[in-house]
Length: 172
Image 1 (cartoon, helix red, strand yellow):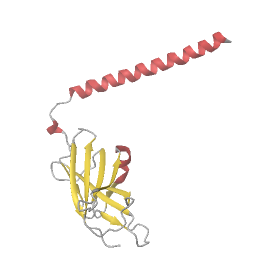
Image 2: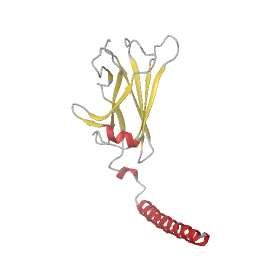
Image 3: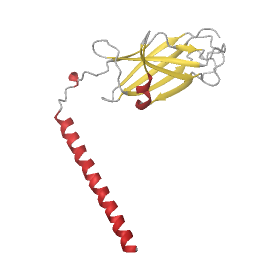
Image 4: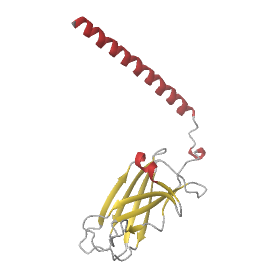
């Protein structure tokens, strides 16, 4: 019984080793292919050159209860030709009140990872990623301009781009 169990375990481990060796060889082939690519980044057709925040970004009343409970930020990665492109990356959004009298300027911060970001592409009256966040705790009155800062880290190049824009919330 013990010998049979050990033989089964050995067979399972042998299968694992073969699978890992196949994965290692696949990764080696991928490294060879990537190493053969030109190092000149100017040939990258998907390079994000700049980042924009669409002017329609603001707080919105999503459930028609009279309270603007959602911050919607439209993020637009732009390529060398000035076209908005769907680029993979991580996005960090910060909301600031730079005129806050109590000194606490940062009101909220959110991060969207590449797997989630790819689902948020939007193309209608504007094109880009539509990011929706809950209104930060403690932000009761939306009566003064706030600053939205977006940081985009390009998944392909690792380059970080930033944009910021003042939004003037509509009165509740």
